[in-house]
Structures are given as structure tokens and as C-alpha cells.
Image (cartoon, rainbow, N blue to C red; front, side, top):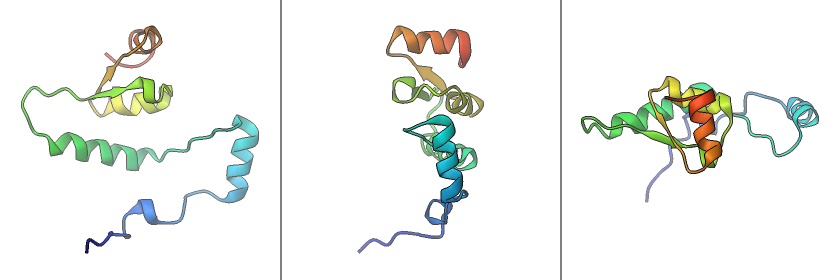
Length: 98
């Protein structure tokens, strides 16, 4: 039987309270997605380092989430943008990634 390591930060208490979540929902509406950039950056690094083939370019599919701040995290980690639509291309050219 496989065990799950619950010591990682994804199993810890969220870094915000229910009151803050309600405040964010009031300000930004629903659905509301909250990301921890440090966890995302570590995850991106783990994926990148798990496939050490030369000349590999990882790309994030912006069709899954076009949030500029999120895409900028992927850019900072050396990832490119996989564009599926003209809107995705616009994000890449005008806003976010090379």
C-alpha cells in the first residue's frame, strides 16, 4: 500500500482565513483561484528537472488559464506559451511570453 507524505505544504492549513476568502470573493467574485507562487515555482522546477533532455522547451497551455500573473510565473521559470487560439497568441505577443 502506498502512503502519502502529508508533510508537504499542500497538506498544511491554507495561508488565509475564511474571512479573507470571503473578502476576496466579495472583491473579485467567483470563481476565485488562489495560487501560492512558491509552491507553483517548486512544482514547475520539479517537472522541468524530471525531464533532462537537451533542447527541451516546456510550454504552458494558456487555454487552461490565461491569468497574466500565473503566466508570468511560468515565464520566469523559463517556460514558453502553447497558444491554441488567437487570444492565446495575443497573450504571448503583447503580454507575457516569448
